[in-house]
Amino acid sequence: MPVIQVENLHKRYGGTVAVDDVSLEVHRGEIFGVLGRNGAGKTTTVEIVGGLREADSGTVRVLGLDPVRDRSRLREVVGLQLQESQLQPKLVVREALDLYASFYPDPADPTQLLDELGLTDRAGARFEQLSGGQKQRLSVALALVGNPQVAILDELTTGLDPHARRDTWEVVERIRDRGVTIVLVTHFMEEAERLCDRIALIDAGRVVATGTPAELVARATAEQVLRFRPSAPVPVGLLEHLARVTHSDDGTIEARGRDNVVQDVLVALAQHGIRPENLRLEQSSLEDAFVALTTSVEV
Ligand SMILES: Nc1ncnc2c1ncn2[C@@H]1O[C@H](COP(=O)(O)OP(=O)(O)OP(=O)(O)O)[C@@H](O)[C@H]1O
Image (cartoon, rainbow, N blue to C red; front, top):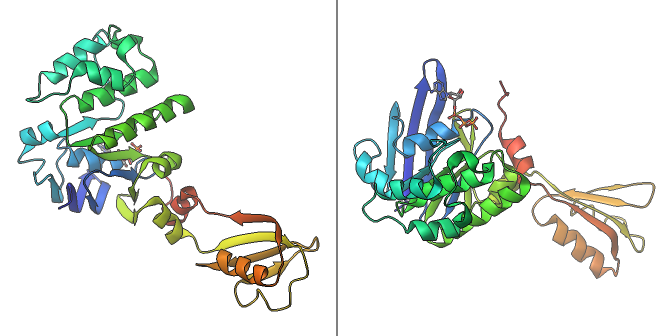
């Protein structure tokens, strides 16, 4: 059974359709990415999953619980790190963790959490004295203090510098390694590609694709391209039945095709003792897939 099951979710704010028939499944132990541009409906979707908002229609089950009907039980098993979560400026880090821990029947050890999130030496600091990265890590610690089975992390690394972002990625991987299922909302391709086992790509309130990062790239990628300079003349027709081939004046050959085109071309060359010199492969990234799969006009 999936840890999270969302079926045909709809949510409007007045005239704005925020979530338009979203269905998705999150499996135990995975990092599941909800990826999309600003305003795509990501936060609304995960806030419904986390019991913070009610859907207009559709079904949500988290570990078999209904987020509306079973809200208090849900709070015990789902940790929420929300966008721009703000605490009282004067609240001391350690006190915040102790306070949140007191809400749960079986909380994590705050001392250990501080250590895992690299906040031990800031335990006595007030919230207002923390850097952006430290605030984010504290918000993750607070999401984890109840020992949740599922953690929902929304725009975790927005506003962080590249170092802090990478440190935070390691934290997310460590949480997953502890057996927590993670839903990660992001609009950073690199983050999704690096961290997520599977991704739902959301555009204008709809899921436009679901799969592993590699599957999404493959789905959106029409062709692969090889460029090389052959070490010896290539017999006429050798590559033409494998790929669309163009020859440049400087002797470079470009071969375009689908599926196994790279392997097929390299094998054919090798069989004729031809080396592909200055070989370059053009590989599509998740960013290319994102652009190809999200067609709506930005407003
Ligand atoms: N409380 C609200 N009242 C009215 N409209 C809202 C409200 N919350 C969100 N919206 C609108 O619903 C749509 C989806 O918003 P949502 O915050 O879910 O998107 P998002 O993908 O999380 O965006 P971002 O990456 O910018 O956080 C947007 O058009 C947004 O303006």
